[in-house]
Length: 383
Image 1 (tube, rainbow, N blue to C red):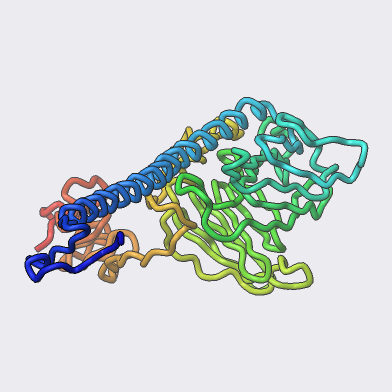
Image 2 (spheres, rainbow, N blue to C red; image 1 turned 180 degrees about the vertical axis):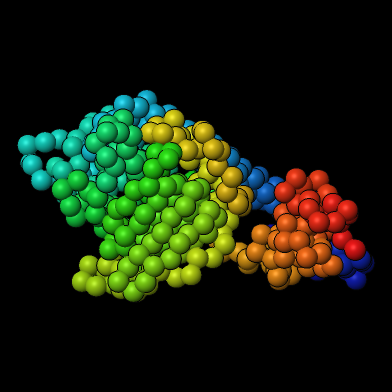
């Protein structure tokens, strides 16, 4: 009979199991070794599989970063090439994708480089960054606003980019309503969706955005969230904002916000906030300098933009205002210090010089021609 048998007590020596009188311990060892080898192969296979799976992710991440930079560079290059000679009160299709609702159905505005008069536009919308399609909507507008006709080559430039939509509320778009996208863009190299506004150097213009009367002689950035708020950030120059609720002046590197509401969610429903100091996203400044050659009466090239900048990709960020020293009060309108018009405390001569600023500060104005004391021999020096 063929089978497993237990023979003699010696047959069980060292837990040996015998079959037909032969020990099977070596066979068990071989099976164990094969099992361990199989486990090693299995672990190796799992590790190899993980590495194979993870490697493309890192490569995809690197490719994504390169793609973002490539898309931005190509978009701005296309804009500059396609919209370099836009006329007054014209809109230019700068880079895919841009869509327009037109007042005249027979007109077309659907290809890069296309131009159209702004009075024909009901609504103009640019698209957010799309990595898959490798698009980033850009549209450039040159508007007369309230500039005099004597300056035909000088226009206010509006650069609409990213997920931004503008509704024309007047014949020449001197008044409009607009919205911009919410949240951070897909790439850290991309500025948040907004509208850049540039007025020619040496001019001040006024237009209305979401019911806010904006007067600028400058470069600014505007964003808006329906039923939220509109922000106005001044990069360079000067500006003032006015609503039915109040008016504020804005300095460079400052931002003011205006509450929005009403039937369309985009009407100013309150006063502009007190401006706060901000730092700008470096990507905004990079975009600004990249397209500055398209501006009429370019303030960027002539004056140089010197905004406070952060390297993080974000909307303008409020910062704490720096404390400033308040100068000690002076009794002298023209020449501060202890003197009246710069005279010494012991002098009866109003043209003498004391501690006055017009007399050179504490030096008493010894080097100042008009600060010399006519009636004493100290030449206006302090006692």
